[in-house]
Image 1 (tube, rainbow, N blue to C red):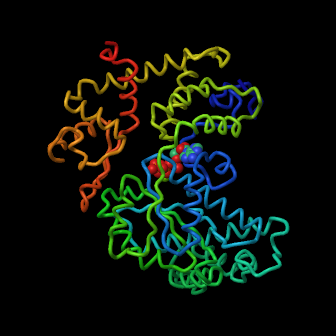
Image 2 (cartoon, rainbow, N blue to C red):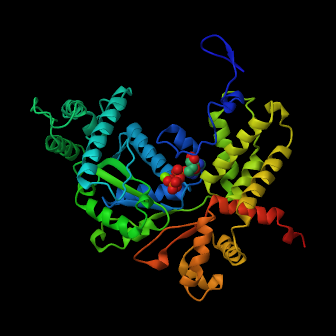
Image 3 (cartoon, helix red, strand yellow):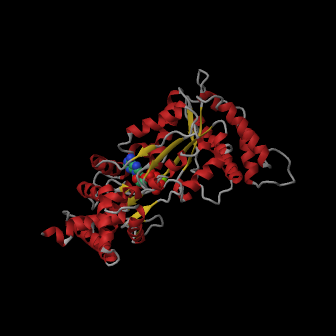
Length: 445
Ligand SMILES: Nc1ncnc2c1ncn2[C@@H]1O[C@H](COP(=O)(O)OP(=O)(O)OP(=O)(O)O)[C@@H](O)[C@H]1O
Ligand SMILES: [Mg+2]
């Protein structure tokens, strides 16, 4: 219960607030590009360093690859915020301004529209950031000529504000021929501003992320779209790019001769090791609690157990942690009911059993064998067919298809290089694996 703004005692529907937290500590959205993101990011020192070095070393496009939910977007967001705030505090080094918008493309994306969207978002991000930096004391008058100083003292700022204001009033209005009513006028101004702010390859830039390239479905398709962008948005001075994708898509793009020399080799983001599970849990509890007595029904050791079941896929772990907390709230009157771990064990058994029962009859014995081998690999490709007891990838294909249909495996289609097609075990698959490990009667013998 809590006291509402209109002065009545009401039932608080947010269980986490009732338990003493600002919000759900197991939120599955990517970590934001701010201080909270920095506080919550665990165990990515090597990847942060690699991404940082790629940004600094050339204007080539940095690429990040890893399975769904492993932490690619979070890594990029946190790195960009870190680099930006370091320069804002020290006034040294290239200035990287994270673009406020994260971009995605599908097969239907029109390159020209996309370019306009990017330019508008870039201009908007520069303005927002300019506003926030100017507000910081001591930031307005750096003594030396630096990227930051150039940015803060740029005379074009008001021109760009006017342009954005005009754009939001609508493109192509004949009544006013002033600045910003046409795409081309706006584009020219943004480009010249970027050139002034970031004149060389070492001055930094507005960093845009093209995320979730797997939305393009096949890496052949992704390659074509990225090739089209090569001479448009990827070639604008002062805009830097990071491409993110899962399931071998980024690797597929890298094979394009047209993109040769334009992309860095992907930074591979792998599942985090179990050693980090406790730290992830503790950071979240500390960051989101509003009082020291805050209490969750899910303990640190429960969280570590989920981490183990989900093989370190953070999004799956957070999702299951939240599912359990909601289940607890549904089934218990009070957090004080929580005394030991029996609730969690009961929920886990129910959850794993239900998942298994729902698919049990749909999986034939041979497909189950394939699934068990797939779990040993975690990620594999059709060319691993021999290890699964098949002579050829096509002999294995029907079993993979049926496991995909039941949601235990997921694969990306790579038209050009069949060997690189990536197949991964899903979170549902890991629950089945855990059911077999914990409760399968065969194991009792
Ligand atoms: N290093 C980390 N430490 C703590 N939490 C993390 C870390 N990386 C990611 N997370 C959390 O894991 C979840 C998934 O992260 P994120 O969205 O960045 O993954 P992703 O690889 O971009 O996923 P997708 O492929 O679906 O885009 C988020 O809830 C995020 O807060
Ligand atoms: Mg992502």
